Image (cartoon, rainbow, N blue to C red; front, top):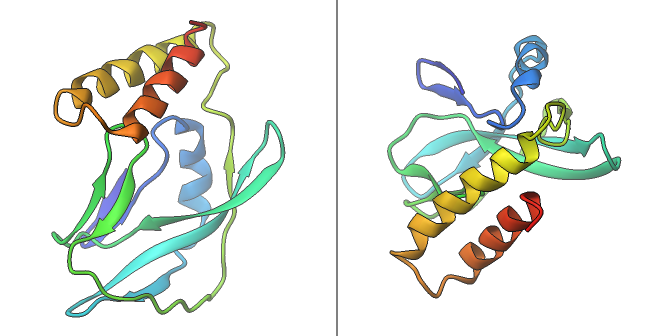
Length: 145
């Protein structure tokens, strides 16, 4: 995570190799208007280099208390103030996802172990959460189980 003043840039924690790329990208914003506040997110093409899959993602930039990432394994953002979105595209950089940095032996298994432990602890609070069940199953698959 890169921070400065009120701005926060969330990079994928599994892709530390992106940091040099992100430092070269000009900050490009998509305006979002809530009922009582303005805040910024970045919306980018998200390209998985392993299978050339292209999708989009949005990342929050403003360090405002009513904006929070929620979820234990794959976080999603939630604006507590509610509101609606007005999107103004200026210029959009692309983020290239390298596939969770599976370059080291055992890195996939380590990620699976970590995610399974996070999901297991979260089950204590929400034992019927189907999203957590999916994440736990995904974590076991990463471990080859």
